[in-house]
Length: 322
Ligand code: SAM
Ligand code: SF4
Image (tube, rainbow, N blue to C red):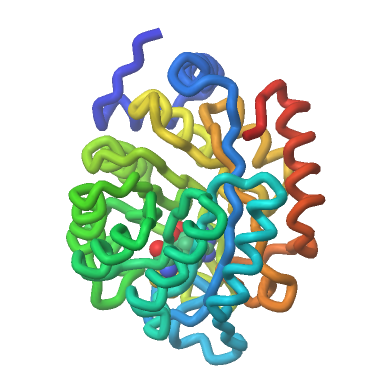
Protein backbone atom coordinates (compact mmCIF):
# COMPACT_ATOMS: atom_id res chain seq x y z
CA UNK A 1 0.00 0.00 0.00
CA UNK A 2 1.32 3.46 -0.93
CA UNK A 3 0.03 6.02 1.50
CA UNK A 4 -0.34 9.72 0.74
CA UNK A 5 1.69 11.32 3.54
CA UNK A 6 0.97 14.94 2.63
CA UNK A 7 -0.86 17.03 5.24
CA UNK A 8 -4.21 16.38 3.54
CA UNK A 9 -3.32 12.73 3.04
CA UNK A 10 -2.42 12.25 6.71
CA UNK A 11 -5.64 13.93 7.78
CA UNK A 12 -7.61 11.53 5.57
CA UNK A 13 -5.73 8.51 6.95
CA UNK A 14 -6.37 9.57 10.55
CA UNK A 15 -10.11 9.75 9.79
CA UNK A 16 -10.41 6.34 8.05
CA UNK A 17 -13.26 4.15 9.17
CA UNK A 18 -11.08 1.04 8.80
CA UNK A 19 -7.49 1.86 9.75
CA UNK A 20 -6.31 -1.78 9.84
CA UNK A 21 -4.49 -1.72 6.43
CA UNK A 22 -2.49 1.33 7.56
CA UNK A 23 -1.67 -0.28 10.91
CA UNK A 24 -0.53 -3.43 9.06
CA UNK A 25 1.65 -1.32 6.75
CA UNK A 26 3.21 0.44 9.75
CA UNK A 27 3.87 -2.90 11.42
CA UNK A 28 5.57 -4.16 8.24
CA UNK A 29 7.70 -1.03 7.92
CA UNK A 30 8.66 -1.34 11.60
CA UNK A 31 9.77 -4.96 11.12
CA UNK A 32 11.79 -4.18 7.98
CA UNK A 33 13.38 -0.98 9.32
CA UNK A 34 14.08 -1.74 13.00
CA UNK A 35 13.23 -5.42 13.46
CA UNK A 36 11.37 -7.15 16.26
CA UNK A 37 13.40 -5.72 19.14
CA UNK A 38 11.58 -3.70 21.79
CA UNK A 39 13.99 -1.43 23.67
CA UNK A 40 13.36 -1.16 27.39
CA UNK A 41 14.36 2.16 28.93
CA UNK A 42 14.58 2.96 32.62
CA UNK A 43 12.80 6.24 33.43
CA UNK A 44 13.90 8.13 36.52
CA UNK A 45 11.91 11.21 37.48
CA UNK A 46 14.52 13.16 39.38
CA UNK A 47 12.61 16.31 40.38
CA UNK A 48 9.01 17.54 40.30
CA UNK A 49 9.96 21.21 40.73
CA UNK A 50 9.01 23.22 37.67
CA UNK A 51 9.18 26.90 36.79
CA UNK A 52 6.72 26.59 33.90
CA UNK A 53 2.92 26.71 33.80
CA UNK A 54 1.89 24.34 31.02
CA UNK A 55 -1.90 24.29 31.20
CA UNK A 56 -2.22 20.49 31.06
CA UNK A 57 0.48 19.44 33.54
CA UNK A 58 0.07 18.61 37.22
CA UNK A 59 3.63 19.79 37.95
CA UNK A 60 2.97 23.39 36.78
CA UNK A 61 4.56 26.05 38.96
CA UNK A 62 1.36 27.57 40.32
CA UNK A 63 0.10 24.30 41.72
CA UNK A 64 0.50 24.89 45.46
CA UNK A 65 -0.91 21.66 46.96
CA UNK A 66 1.75 19.34 45.53
CA UNK A 67 4.70 18.51 47.82
CA UNK A 68 7.85 19.03 45.78
CA UNK A 69 10.89 16.75 45.79
CA UNK A 70 14.31 16.72 44.25
CA UNK A 71 16.50 13.61 44.24
CA UNK A 72 20.06 14.16 45.39
CA UNK A 73 22.83 13.22 42.94
CA UNK A 74 23.79 10.18 45.10
CA UNK A 75 20.17 8.94 45.04
CA UNK A 76 20.10 9.23 41.26
CA UNK A 77 23.34 7.32 41.00
CA UNK A 78 22.04 4.55 43.29
CA UNK A 79 18.92 4.11 41.15
CA UNK A 80 21.08 4.13 38.00
CA UNK A 81 23.29 1.36 39.39
CA UNK A 82 20.24 -0.73 40.21
CA UNK A 83 18.77 -0.20 36.73
CA UNK A 84 22.07 -1.21 35.15
CA UNK A 85 22.25 -4.35 37.29
CA UNK A 86 18.67 -5.22 36.24
CA UNK A 87 19.77 -5.16 32.59
CA UNK A 88 18.83 -1.69 31.36
CA UNK A 89 21.13 -0.12 28.76
CA UNK A 90 19.52 3.32 28.71
CA UNK A 91 18.59 5.63 31.54
CA UNK A 92 16.11 8.42 30.86
CA UNK A 93 16.47 11.26 33.35
CA UNK A 94 13.34 13.38 33.39
CA UNK A 95 12.22 16.38 35.46
CA UNK A 96 10.31 19.60 35.54
CA UNK A 97 12.33 22.69 34.68
CA UNK A 98 14.02 22.81 38.06
CA UNK A 99 16.36 25.80 38.48
CA UNK A 100 18.39 23.96 41.14
CA UNK A 101 19.43 21.37 38.58
CA UNK A 102 21.59 23.72 36.54
CA UNK A 103 23.44 22.32 33.54
CA UNK A 104 26.57 22.18 35.74
CA UNK A 105 24.89 20.03 38.42
CA UNK A 106 23.04 17.88 35.92
CA UNK A 107 26.25 17.47 33.93
CA UNK A 108 28.00 16.02 36.98
CA UNK A 109 25.18 13.51 37.39
CA UNK A 110 25.32 12.53 33.71
CA UNK A 111 29.08 12.08 33.81
CA UNK A 112 28.87 9.97 36.99
CA UNK A 113 26.09 7.73 35.59
CA UNK A 114 28.01 7.21 32.35
CA UNK A 115 31.31 6.67 34.14
CA UNK A 116 29.92 4.12 36.59
CA UNK A 117 27.39 2.23 34.49
CA UNK A 118 28.20 2.87 30.83
CA UNK A 119 24.47 3.21 30.14
CA UNK A 120 23.29 5.57 27.41
CA UNK A 121 21.74 8.66 28.98
CA UNK A 122 18.66 10.38 27.63
CA UNK A 123 17.76 13.71 29.19
CA UNK A 124 14.25 15.12 29.32
CA UNK A 125 14.55 18.21 31.50
CA UNK A 126 12.93 20.87 29.34
CA UNK A 127 14.13 23.99 27.58
CA UNK A 128 17.64 25.37 28.09
CA UNK A 129 20.04 27.58 26.18
CA UNK A 130 22.29 26.06 23.53
CA UNK A 131 25.39 26.50 25.75
CA UNK A 132 23.75 24.40 28.48
CA UNK A 133 22.75 21.69 26.03
CA UNK A 134 26.34 21.74 24.70
CA UNK A 135 27.73 21.34 28.22
CA UNK A 136 25.45 18.37 28.93
CA UNK A 137 26.48 16.79 25.65
CA UNK A 138 30.13 17.22 26.61
CA UNK A 139 29.36 15.45 29.91
CA UNK A 140 28.16 12.44 27.93
CA UNK A 141 24.40 12.90 27.39
CA UNK A 142 23.47 10.92 24.28
CA UNK A 143 19.86 11.80 23.60
CA UNK A 144 17.37 14.51 24.50
CA UNK A 145 13.61 14.19 24.63
CA UNK A 146 11.68 17.43 24.29
CA UNK A 147 8.20 16.99 22.88
CA UNK A 148 6.93 19.86 20.76
CA UNK A 149 3.50 19.09 22.37
CA UNK A 150 1.46 20.74 19.59
CA UNK A 151 2.64 22.21 16.31
CA UNK A 152 -0.24 24.68 16.11
CA UNK A 153 0.88 28.22 16.93
CA UNK A 154 -2.34 29.34 18.63
CA UNK A 155 -2.85 26.14 20.62
CA UNK A 156 0.80 26.22 21.71
CA UNK A 157 0.44 29.78 23.03
CA UNK A 158 -2.85 28.96 24.74
CA UNK A 159 -1.30 26.10 26.73
CA UNK A 160 2.17 27.55 27.36
CA UNK A 161 2.02 31.03 28.92
CA UNK A 162 4.87 33.22 27.69
CA UNK A 163 6.23 30.67 25.28
CA UNK A 164 5.99 29.77 21.59
CA UNK A 165 6.30 26.77 19.29
CA UNK A 166 9.15 28.63 17.54
CA UNK A 167 11.19 28.62 20.78
CA UNK A 168 10.43 24.94 21.32
CA UNK A 169 11.48 24.00 17.80
CA UNK A 170 14.54 26.26 18.21
CA UNK A 171 15.63 24.06 21.14
CA UNK A 172 15.08 20.89 19.11
CA UNK A 173 17.18 22.25 16.24
CA UNK A 174 19.95 23.27 18.66
CA UNK A 175 19.96 19.74 20.12
CA UNK A 176 20.25 18.27 16.61
CA UNK A 177 23.17 20.62 15.77
CA UNK A 178 24.98 19.43 18.92
CA UNK A 179 24.81 15.80 17.80
CA UNK A 180 22.16 14.58 20.23
CA UNK A 181 19.76 11.89 19.12
CA UNK A 182 16.68 14.07 19.23
CA UNK A 183 13.26 13.05 20.44
CA UNK A 184 10.13 15.12 19.99
CA UNK A 185 6.49 14.14 20.16
CA UNK A 186 3.07 15.47 20.98
CA UNK A 187 -0.14 14.91 22.88
CA UNK A 188 -3.25 13.59 21.21
CA UNK A 189 -6.63 14.99 22.22
CA UNK A 190 -5.70 18.44 23.53
CA UNK A 191 -8.79 20.65 23.61
CA UNK A 192 -9.21 22.45 20.27
CA UNK A 193 -6.90 20.08 18.40
CA UNK A 194 -8.15 18.90 15.00
CA UNK A 195 -7.02 16.10 12.70
CA UNK A 196 -5.40 18.77 10.57
CA UNK A 197 -3.28 19.87 13.57
CA UNK A 198 -2.29 16.23 14.20
CA UNK A 199 -1.20 15.96 10.55
CA UNK A 200 0.92 19.09 11.14
CA UNK A 201 2.36 17.47 14.30
CA UNK A 202 3.36 14.39 12.33
CA UNK A 203 5.01 16.42 9.58
CA UNK A 204 6.95 18.45 12.13
CA UNK A 205 8.52 15.20 13.46
CA UNK A 206 9.84 14.57 9.96
CA UNK A 207 10.91 18.15 9.40
CA UNK A 208 13.08 18.42 12.55
CA UNK A 209 13.90 15.47 11.84
CA UNK A 210 13.71 13.41 15.02
CA UNK A 211 15.10 9.98 15.78
CA UNK A 212 12.51 9.40 18.53
CA UNK A 213 8.92 10.52 18.96
CA UNK A 214 6.78 10.14 22.07
CA UNK A 215 3.12 10.31 21.10
CA UNK A 216 0.67 9.97 23.98
CA UNK A 217 -2.93 10.80 24.85
CA UNK A 218 -3.68 13.97 26.78
CA UNK A 219 -5.00 13.01 30.24
CA UNK A 220 -6.79 15.80 32.17
CA UNK A 221 -5.44 16.59 35.62
CA UNK A 222 -7.98 17.91 38.17
CA UNK A 223 -5.59 20.55 39.55
CA UNK A 224 -4.98 22.23 36.18
CA UNK A 225 -6.90 24.69 33.98
CA UNK A 226 -7.75 21.76 31.67
CA UNK A 227 -9.41 19.73 34.45
CA UNK A 228 -12.78 19.58 32.70
CA UNK A 229 -11.45 18.60 29.27
CA UNK A 230 -12.04 15.13 27.79
CA UNK A 231 -9.09 12.71 27.65
CA UNK A 232 -7.41 11.90 24.34
CA UNK A 233 -8.39 8.75 22.45
CA UNK A 234 -6.18 5.66 22.60
CA UNK A 235 -7.13 4.65 19.05
CA UNK A 236 -6.27 8.07 17.61
CA UNK A 237 -2.96 7.96 19.50
CA UNK A 238 -2.14 4.57 17.97
CA UNK A 239 -3.04 5.90 14.51
CA UNK A 240 -0.59 8.76 15.00
CA UNK A 241 2.13 6.29 16.03
CA UNK A 242 1.45 4.21 12.89
CA UNK A 243 1.72 7.29 10.65
CA UNK A 244 4.90 8.40 12.45
CA UNK A 245 6.36 4.97 11.60
CA UNK A 246 5.47 5.44 7.91
CA UNK A 247 6.99 8.93 7.90
CA UNK A 248 10.12 7.99 9.87
CA UNK A 249 10.77 4.26 9.32
CA UNK A 250 14.02 4.15 11.34
CA UNK A 251 12.77 6.09 14.35
CA UNK A 252 12.34 4.90 17.91
CA UNK A 253 8.68 5.14 18.82
CA UNK A 254 7.72 4.42 22.44
CA UNK A 255 4.50 2.94 23.67
CA UNK A 256 4.12 5.97 25.94
CA UNK A 257 3.44 5.65 29.65
CA UNK A 258 0.28 7.77 29.24
CA UNK A 259 -1.11 5.19 26.84
CA UNK A 260 -0.75 2.49 29.48
CA UNK A 261 -2.57 4.46 32.17
CA UNK A 262 -6.06 3.20 31.37
CA UNK A 263 -5.20 -0.41 30.59
CA UNK A 264 -2.04 -2.35 29.96
CA UNK A 265 -3.79 -3.68 26.81
CA UNK A 266 -3.93 -0.16 25.37
CA UNK A 267 -0.19 0.14 25.75
CA UNK A 268 0.47 -3.29 24.29
CA UNK A 269 -1.79 -2.72 21.25
CA UNK A 270 0.45 0.06 20.03
CA UNK A 271 3.26 -2.45 19.47
CA UNK A 272 1.31 -3.69 16.43
CA UNK A 273 1.01 -0.09 15.15
CA UNK A 274 4.74 0.57 14.80
CA UNK A 275 6.03 1.14 18.35
CA UNK A 276 9.40 -0.38 19.33
CA UNK A 277 10.32 1.20 22.69
CA UNK A 278 8.88 1.16 26.19
CA UNK A 279 9.91 3.13 29.26
CA UNK A 280 9.51 1.77 32.74
CA UNK A 281 9.49 4.06 35.76
CA UNK A 282 12.25 3.28 38.23
CA UNK A 283 11.52 6.34 40.40
CA UNK A 284 11.83 5.47 44.12
CA UNK A 285 8.52 4.88 45.92
CA UNK A 286 9.07 7.90 48.18
CA UNK A 287 8.74 10.17 45.12
CA UNK A 288 6.81 8.25 42.49
CA UNK A 289 3.28 9.49 43.30
CA UNK A 290 4.58 13.06 43.58
CA UNK A 291 5.60 13.08 39.93
CA UNK A 292 1.96 13.80 39.34
CA UNK A 293 1.76 14.93 35.69
CA UNK A 294 -1.64 13.28 35.21
CA UNK A 295 -3.75 11.01 37.44
CA UNK A 296 -2.46 7.44 37.36
CA UNK A 297 -2.50 4.45 39.69
CA UNK A 298 1.15 3.48 39.82
CA UNK A 299 2.53 0.15 41.05
CA UNK A 300 5.29 0.26 43.65
CA UNK A 301 8.73 0.33 42.08
CA UNK A 302 10.70 -2.91 42.07
CA UNK A 303 13.28 -2.32 39.38
CA UNK A 304 14.43 -5.88 38.67
CA UNK A 305 11.05 -7.64 39.09
CA UNK A 306 9.20 -5.11 36.96
CA UNK A 307 11.75 -5.38 34.20
CA UNK A 308 11.41 -9.18 34.18
CA UNK A 309 7.60 -8.92 34.05
CA UNK A 310 7.75 -6.46 31.15
CA UNK A 311 10.18 -8.70 29.27
CA UNK A 312 7.63 -11.53 29.62
CA UNK A 313 4.83 -9.34 28.28
CA UNK A 314 6.95 -8.34 25.30
CA UNK A 315 7.89 -11.94 24.53
CA UNK A 316 4.20 -12.86 24.72
CA UNK A 317 3.62 -10.33 21.92
CA UNK A 318 6.18 -12.21 19.80
CA UNK A 319 8.78 -9.47 20.18
CA UNK A 320 12.31 -9.44 21.57
CA UNK A 321 13.01 -7.33 24.68
CA UNK A 322 16.41 -5.64 24.88
N1 SAM B 1 9.55 19.28 31.79
C1 SAM B 1 9.96 18.54 30.64
C2 SAM B 1 9.15 18.94 29.45
O1 SAM B 1 8.08 19.51 29.60
O2 SAM B 1 9.62 18.66 28.35
C3 SAM B 1 9.87 17.05 30.85
C4 SAM B 1 8.86 16.55 31.82
S1 SAM B 1 7.18 16.70 31.26
C5 SAM B 1 6.28 16.23 32.66
C6 SAM B 1 7.08 15.28 30.19
C7 SAM B 1 5.88 15.20 29.29
O3 SAM B 1 4.71 15.01 30.05
C8 SAM B 1 5.56 16.42 28.46
O4 SAM B 1 6.34 16.45 27.31
C9 SAM B 1 4.07 16.26 28.18
O5 SAM B 1 3.86 15.79 26.86
C10 SAM B 1 3.64 15.20 29.17
N2 SAM B 1 2.45 15.62 29.93
C11 SAM B 1 2.34 16.59 30.83
N3 SAM B 1 1.07 16.70 31.27
C12 SAM B 1 0.35 15.77 30.60
C13 SAM B 1 -1.03 15.38 30.61
N4 SAM B 1 -1.92 16.01 31.38
N5 SAM B 1 -1.41 14.37 29.80
C14 SAM B 1 -0.51 13.73 29.03
N6 SAM B 1 0.80 14.05 28.98
C15 SAM B 1 1.22 15.06 29.75
FE1 SF4 C 1 6.93 21.71 33.68
FE2 SF4 C 1 7.26 19.90 31.73
FE3 SF4 C 1 5.02 19.98 33.22
FE4 SF4 C 1 5.47 21.92 31.48
S1 SF4 C 1 5.15 19.73 31.00
S2 SF4 C 1 4.78 22.21 33.61
S3 SF4 C 1 7.69 22.11 31.60
S4 SF4 C 1 7.05 19.48 33.92
